[in-house]
Length: 320
Ligand code: APR
Image (cartoon, rainbow, N blue to C red; front, top):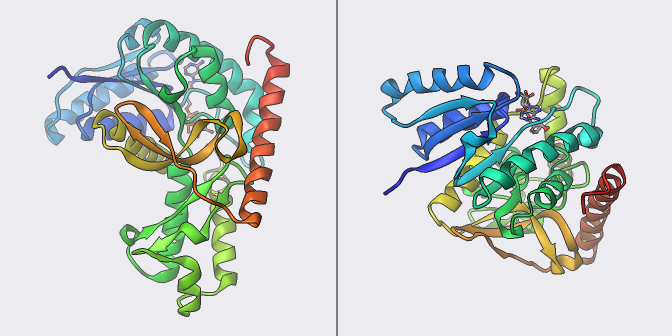
């Protein structure tokens, strides 16, 4: 069987971690593209040199030439600028939109059949713009945020309940921003929903409210600590889970920024919802019922994303 080819656009903190994880999981050959000369070449060589110890083979290439991503099966985009302390993800809009234009053209020309996972922030609007620029089908372009947000939520819940993270599932809806909607009703410990756990005396509503807020601020908490960049281990691992679902046709049910065509009352926008990922890319959107309050929170989040989409259309009239 031919080996898969993984192209990583952006070879910074997340890009480098993605390359390492993809190599350890033996996804296939890996190309790292970055505009900084030497950076992706250095990381690719370093990675290849860990192969004999870890026992993985493959081609590892760093490049400044989009031609090298030709025929990629999966493209993961982290090119752009991360946040600095005090910045919101939305502050990155103008600068990262320009990056998406260049990246989108490269993908359109050389990897039009790839499954494209975007990580660059502000996520929901960047993945929307990237899809518009590439012209790829909507089911093949997706944004990584929900796996990360729910992983943060799972960790905080597991710590609160003093149980393994493995036994905690969590559910996060909406945009990857301060308005994201962590849904406690659909979050469980071994199938027991969080509201039941409150009734069982495992925790209090107040503690859960604190955890929900900490999840919303999860990225900012790390930016504040790092001072010179944003989170990269958990974002990389989250995108790798999505790539794995695609490459192995696993039909995983994962939260992702997906293109909605009327589901949840949203049309022609990317926003975080549960989806099924398999060999067809985003094969299904999972539409769960929401209470009145949950709907209102989700709508606030959708409105925030919609405002950014309008801003993009104003900045660059060729998009949208
Ligand atoms: N084409 C390719 N690579 C680019 C381009 C471009 N036009 N512009 C910038 N880059 C590269 C930078 O040279 C850098 O190596 O993107 C890389 C980004 O890496 P980091 O600065 O380390 O940022 P990282 O932490 O990886 O985050 C990347 O993901 O989570 C989001 O908000 C985050 O938007 C940011 C992105």
